[in-house]
Image (spheres, rainbow, N blue to C red):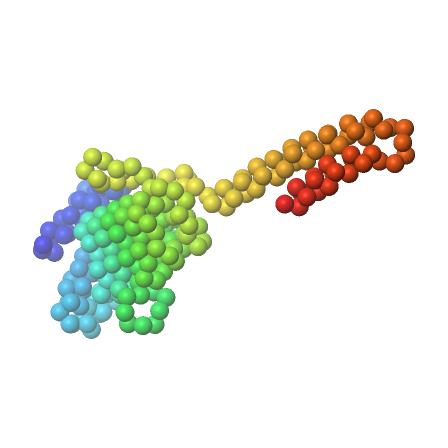
Length: 250
């Protein structure tokens, strides 16, 4: 597939995925994500031919011109769209599949000083939210979403939603059309919050323990009322109280 065919696909996907895009001319002239991808495809071709220095020079020019740093060794599939793009960093051994959507401030970084595979693999139809970081030779599975500001340091299964620091899988991601393409849901406000879930679970557990403790206290008061004339507590009073203390400690 020629570079011009790839360029046409990239323009069309920008028009499809950015409601602010109004025309082909506007996308060609005003979209740094498109410019960075176009320059990267040329640089990547030079890199594969062993022309490493010219490829790196072109990459440096692209970073200066667009604010997006893509190592020429990185592999990027078809119809990838970098929206806005300022601050995006894509490392040398990163592999990005087809139809991936990347927002500004995203980093695909390495965690090793070795020369082998040390950057992430992003499979098809993944959405990576703004300010997210994916570190190391991990894999983000097909049709997954990475919430804004997340830090992913371990592999993510397909069809997952990941949020938090470090990133945790909190649910399945999206619905798909009859052709298998995702129906993208970009509403980050609807992403589950694992911290809120944990606090809600603890709150529910405390409420349940309080109810059980009150029931035990109520059961202990009735035998005590029968022995109201005695100055010593009834023996039956001590057993439920001890059980309540054990339950509270648990």
